[in-house]
Image (tube, rainbow, N blue to C red; front, side, top):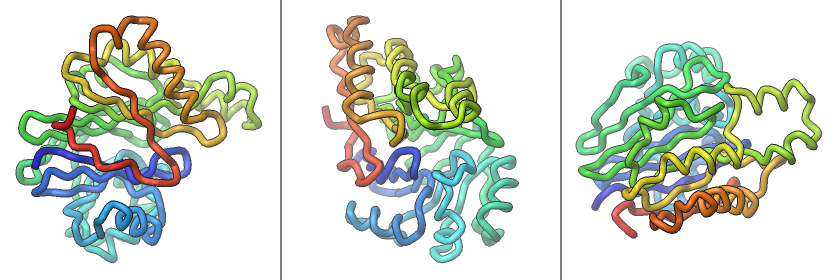
Length: 267
């Protein structure tokens, strides 16, 4: 079957993604109530019974809101690193010991023929990570909540067939917005979020001959627009000649609905 995925929802109000290789289905983050997650799964023809595990990037509420409830109710194994688990214990309530799995930052776990690898990122959380997913020769990389694109991150997502990358805010909109300055400063910092401009500039280095699609993710509802993110990133790639030499396509994500299933083997 090959690797496929759907971004159930992405943005500052909640995040969840399903990755499926025909043998194993995993949920990446659970940033909505159990009821909302069930609804989103149903929209893509799934239920919690189809899931084999939940992976956690970090402990902020837009990534773990429903985690405790679904882990307890559906007896799902949950994977996170030790420092994140310390926060989850405080924020999510008791998760049965048999469902608690530690995946060290930089470590990997095999779910049959689906391999999952974590790597560290820069964000204001205990020990935030992003993930690579491998099935056969296919590679999907999902990296959001990035203060900046470090050398390690660039190395980790290298040669992904499909990359899901944060394009959180437009700097001008953020600076002119209503947030207090201390919050603006956090978002703009190296432990905050990646702007449209930073995403575009980073992609000039990251996009390779293997890259088929890039999804722009985790857009701020207050300081970004879907069309603006795509236009800003696209213009930077065009100005740097990326589109002339490589057939990569930019794709949208949504805060209010899932993306269509994307099969990596498709052009």
